[in-house]
Length: 121
Length: 214
Image (tube, rainbow over all chains, first blue to last red; front, side):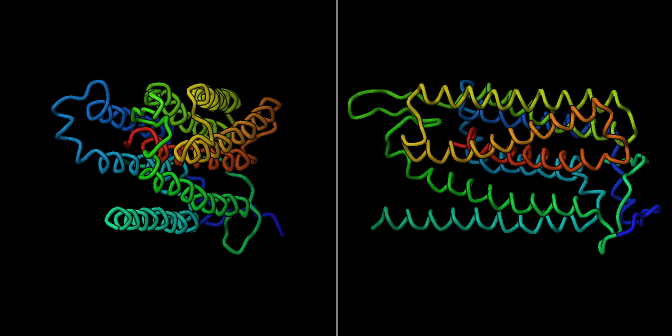
């Protein structure tokens, strides 16, 4: 194989990464989302739980999963450079990720079904 | 959010059929396979949540009283783990700043931010060692109950990944100190950074699943 002096367009795109300012903004958003997650836990189940916590309880898990997904996407898009890099990398990452989500959801549904029958006989 | 592109010197590439560096394709493939690995461990943890309350304790969020009258308080310590989580997130920021430094040839930024990343990683591993020791003293081991087995397996494998990442980053930091990571070799750091970010995103999922969701 021969070394290229001129990088092809696809390769050049790989190296157009975000600026330090954008990295810091993403870091701030990640920090705020983590604080919100823990804050949500505290007002729902923690030492500071009150009447408002009871109202939030039905939305607790969906909200946590939503914030977690947002953090996951931010790290993958900006810190792992999937937004700027070749789409091949996104495919290689996202395809098994979708299978992984299907595995988790299927097993939860399967076990929930199993326990529902085990309880009702 | 607008992505502001920064032009910098990239490493010399070998010609491949995709036009992409094979090492980078390899690390992404590895990360893809790791998604499936952690998915099985997270599934294992979640599906056993339903059954472990039959005992014996202790449990993450619930008080459990044994037939002999011994009371086990909830075992999870949110503040300490939150601090570890925050530092792991910051370490992801620090390593991209180290990478940006390496790509523009700033030795000071590379060495400094990489050291900060290593410090955060070491704190996280230390936090986990403390947590595991604390749990064992409270009566929770791998053999105590389903929670113990699935918790130690999931977080233990993650901690092992963090430890491997820290060792990898320390070797790169030593190379950086010796000036052996010039801009054209920054891909070596980028590959380690991708692994490190993956370890971070896995924890982004584990943290709410294990520590926050009751």
